[in-house]
Image (cartoon, rainbow, N blue to C red; front, side, top):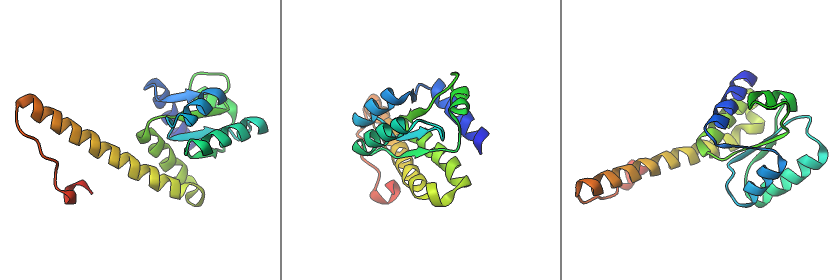
Length: 150
């Protein structure tokens, strides 16, 4: 599980959907731009409390994972990283799915919520693409029936 999660975090970094460090994560969380915050198991107490407070105010799930600062840092090309924030709901859902596979009691509920949000986001993007395509072709566009949306 650890290798899969670390690989996903590296991919998230390359995609530009990962913020590194306590200050960046807290600032983005307060701006409601964060979908998930992960903290290293050996993060300092002050870092943990500041990050949890910002995550609470920004309604972002925040977890301390069983990985060290060195392990998290190595995944994103740094020596160490105590806090990272995922800004994309799809990456956040995938990370939580990997975490919930190892500990369903701790991560299961949040994982399900993020998967639901990710599916909703995908539906909205597809609908927007269909609408734009119809507009470009000069055709009228109508939203799909409610049964198809759920």
